[in-house]
Length: 242
Image (cartoon, rainbow, N blue to C red):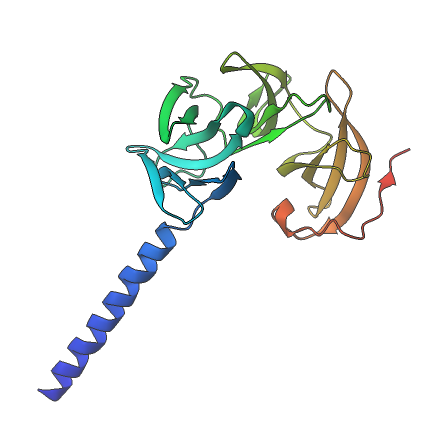
């Protein structure tokens, strides 16, 4: 009798811990942005707005979608997200939500389901103060008809995004990307985590030419990392490609 009671207690405790851990994991945001004393939290299942005291102002549930990734354009008070389905490693559509007056409001959901987007962020490729939206997609290209990671750059105008550069390839197949002022010249460069020919990886910097991106430096090579977040930029030499 005592053994059964002990087993019951153990299962009860483990069940409670499992539920508590699961709930705490579910509430970890994908990204958090602080704008004008308002916090915009992007979760897999919702967008949330909170004040400086972490008091919830508004929550926008995404059912039946989940959010794969998202970014904020604070000047226009909009959030861009990639919408997908539970269990998918990539998304299906791009979407835009306005946050104003303490409320989220859907502006548009893209109907293009052929892009398979997996990462989205804001950038300024021309350094003119007019940000663009960078999207990592997984699709075929006209001159490279196999599924692979590709980078699309969109301009923002009148509440919509328009294609600015739809890249077919970088210099090598890539796994991840970001934008960073790697040479401290006041302009952000495209930073890509690419495959080397030997299967190892490298960090490559590209500059915008007006018509696309040109490789200008290798920031690290012979790497075993799987994301740019694992790479330390501090103290790295900017070895320009001649």
